[in-house]
Image (cartoon, rainbow, N blue to C red; front, side):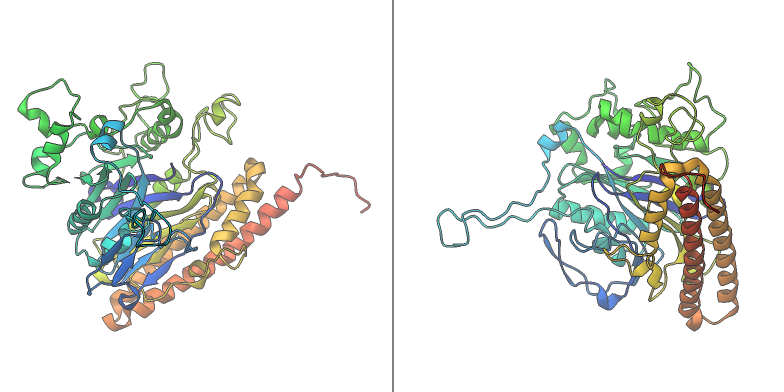
Length: 506
């Protein structure tokens, strides 16, 4: 199960933005090249058919423009992964999750069933294909271009899940400039959603995360919670609530993690350590290391959300989503601990990172340039996020033109090459990697500030052109600096090869 998600409410960020971010990772043994593209209304399908599940859905005729960071290869469908619309609604989809066997028995996954009985449709043995439900491949394409707010996007996604079902368990982050929502699919057709408190951040590491849910609110006023219309009956009929609390007030504080989720030894290797480290980073003054520490890397009760000690920055998120347990005995590149401890837990910054997308919606600029997607392709510890405006008609070829061909003409493949060369000699290359990150982030902040000022001074008709030019400028600088980093890590690592020999004839 890949991917890591962090969601931050507007009062918990450095500038009052809402921010949702996710590492899109692949499973073991494969890599999915990534790109960054704009989807104009005329390019949005009106009749949609999923590649993986073969489900067919008629879509509304009035989509808006949006930009996404999808897979470059079409073998598994669009897989938009992260996107922001011109209406300043953002989605990241999905965080792979798991539900327990009782849930799966009560509401099985809607899985594609191929046709049976050969090609003869008149045969008595013939059974037609039964399409599966919707999933990660589909969510953003089916929801984002039709929603006017995060709340409306949650409602549309919930209606689609109820109608078509899903073949997998997923977590979806959705935001607008005011609200951040998190949706978890529960079985084949059910779902819950919770609003991240404005002063909190939420961490999700491939494990059902929501740990406090007000069912009365979700089925009533829906101020901070939403869910399937029959959720109460679903829970009661299938005996999913294991709490010993039988008071009516209990339904205002359900723990979905315990009702629907899993807790296995594998979670302690793969999932809980990542939540522990993310929260350790944003709340560093708490006790995380002593024998009496209330939370450890294998704790089952790490909270879904909490208030950070300081307001969260883009740099904080980039570090967290690139991290490998720095300053702990579990750092794969560190010197603390033992060989065993340094390989004990699955890091956040892993070789299978496909991209990191930080989706920022800023309240202090006009709607036309409010949305910025900070993007990094490849293994996160070896690169940096860079900002790109999403309310554009085209995107830079350096990011948009990714194919399956390995080439330094594409950001994705250049970063993959850098990571593979630098990884065996991480400490020797770390200074250059740090300088690269510092340069890209500082240049990016400066470029966005300058573009914002230029947009403010001009008429609205020229805004798209100005944003596209800003993106081209960022891509040009990113390409120049990425090529320079490649040259430097190649030189450093070449001198550290096993066949190196210092004596030469000159």
